[in-house]
Length: 183
Image (cartoon, rainbow, N blue to C red; front, side):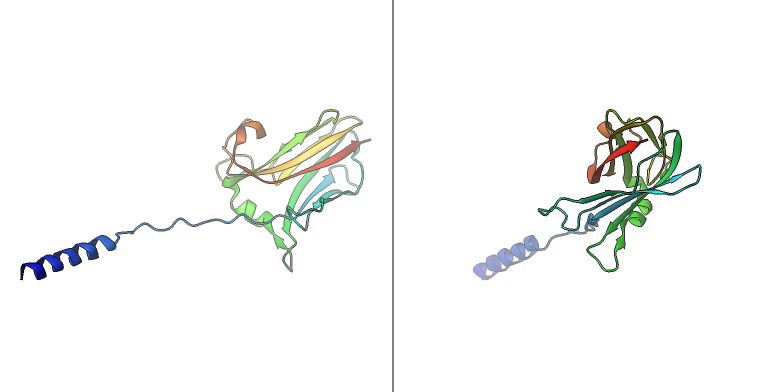
């Protein structure tokens, strides 16, 4: 009888040990979206034709370089109202990632890096719900005739507020560099 009692105690202990009290709710994983295309549209505040800068990389991290197009040069002394559109063109129809970035504005921020030699200024004009910069809308002023690089970088989960890209932290969702000419 002692053996039966001992065996029952051991089995009961093993049964209790195998049961876990995992009452934690699993953390929702927010998968990063694929961004294949970034389009910057610059509308001059003086009227006239818009300028469109596009980078398209349909193979993502594949071997092919992105296709970069710029519709025309900027005009010195003109201020442009800019918008950024992000797409995943691996899907049909293409998925508009801009909507998700704006819905999750507290977790995103665009930065504009102006290379040496290019005389432009760029300032974000739209904000997240906390009053921090988002930057899918911005104002760009082409000051004087010049040329150089203009890079648009989208950071996911940056520190907000921040002093710019160098102090933002987070992860880069996309970075696109354009060779810009101001006439």
